[in-house]
Length: 196
Image 1 (spheres, one colour):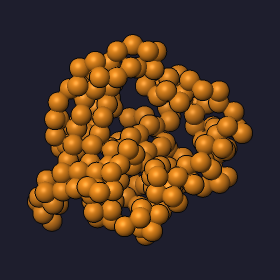
Image 2: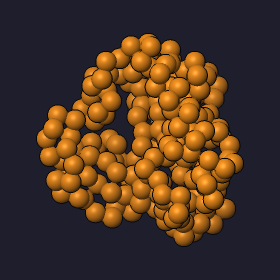
Image 3: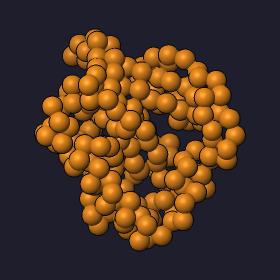
Image 4: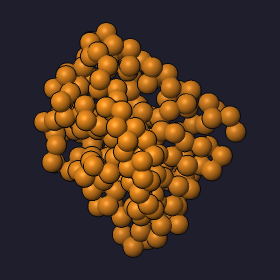
């Protein structure tokens, strides 16, 4: 099936979160969160080294919206369900619809660090991918130096399949090692049965 013809929701909820696709007009909240969090994001996110302006972030939100509609990328924004506060970004990226296989990426704004929101969001996004997109495999790839980030798939019982040594360049051009975590559909179904 042509991916653009695939129908699935553009939002869903977890216990504390609303997770939805970006929309035109989201640039202002994105600009505020990235500006607040830039020093926290720079060591890990290449895009945090680009000029941050309100206009640029609105452009980013609109491109993300279009990518979601075209099913070329599935970016997602994370909000507190009660307050509506913008918490961070995530999504399903670098996918292969033929498998289907997806990779989850994520970032959190500085003021929301340590509250468990990203762990909850990643669990919700994995459930969404397995339930709505019929994923067979979900990956999380993390810089080996970013312990706070790789603790998330470990908490969620993803399998560490290996550490790819010197497989990529970090944001400063240095060689880095990448941890590759994955969960396959059978593991997710088994864990779901255990929770019921």
